[in-house]
Image 1 (cartoon, one colour):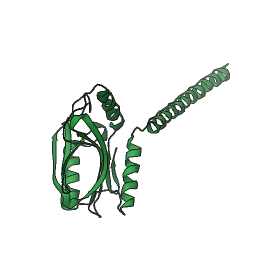
Image 2: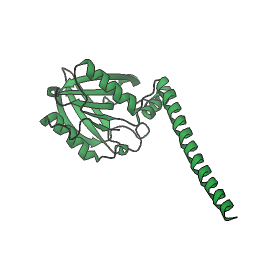
Image 3: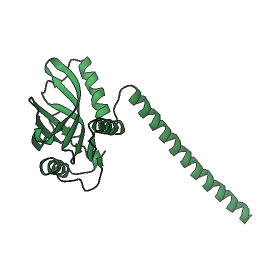
Image 4: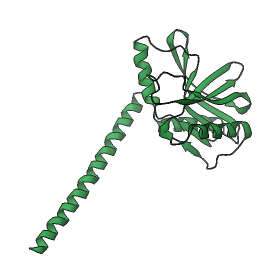
Length: 205
């Protein structure tokens, strides 16, 4: 009788562990399928944004030594599509960054995001600049409406002048688990003082 009870307990534990494992596998598969469908529809994920930055820099013989990739880019894009349908796209004159990457050794800055233009037009951009073109780096209140970029209080603002002045802001997300002021200080140190990242590569995602 004792052995029968022990066998039943063992079978229960094995069944419980197996059920938990199968649930985890199915959840991972579901999430992977959702991400693949999202990317196939033109959506953006931190993984694809980081890979795009690496590919872009590789064409310029540069290397990503630091990259911050938005976890909200897909939601922001979806929000913008709805606002476009409602003719409610903000005319801000500020670029919203999805990705910021830095090659300290090559003194290059990579920026990818969207710009809001007059008449509610939205234009995606992906470009790089030399450190010498960076005019200002500071921390500001999040300039984007909560309906577009939710749950973000501050942003990293970068002003670049390559013959035309560009103002872009990277919303500083809590999901990165790094203090906003620390991230701003780190980016400023790399661009203004040529400070190497503490770890190579440093990836915030």
